Length: 228
Image 1 (cartoon, rainbow, N blue to C red):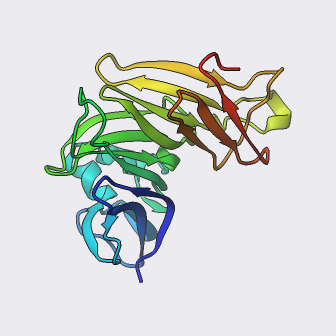
Image 2 (cartoon, rainbow, N blue to C red):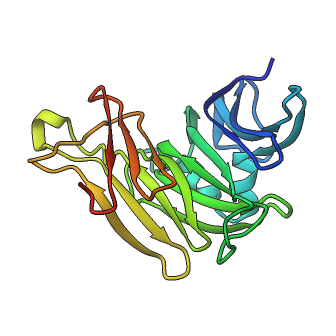
């Protein structure tokens, strides 16, 4: 009965972390700039038996952490911040893995991707406090993953122009939270085109290789540690 979508991530305890959404046809108290109809994205934790054991509203998380301005990016009116429709487009949630050595991030932290506002953030599921956030470092991104206790990777669709116009390339980037440094790990090129304006996933394999789904290209490919 609850509309869920995009990624499904199994936590270490067996519960499922998923993206949820509520179609709001009435105003949401405390958010006068969100004009119905609009989508309220939610982070959900669901037991294997189908019981909801955790729920966070994305607009509430942003407001509670002083980032309510991100909900106004769709407006182009000088005198109004009114926004409606698919405002944030949550497309991935992922808990910090128990087997990973903690660093800047640790147990209880959750990695979140909001495609339509080009934002990725990490919040503490116990307190709701946002520990790290970055906006505008990628364009229409998907599928971030914790790489280690200080770093996460992001599938940057880099959807800046039609492929036929300027030959843009998608890329995989690494974001270091302590230093706030951003490094391109792999990018498409003229010799090895890789561009998917929507969709797309990547997966770090046990041997250190990287598996990439080039959705609009209709293929998947695997890179070794030398990016071959």
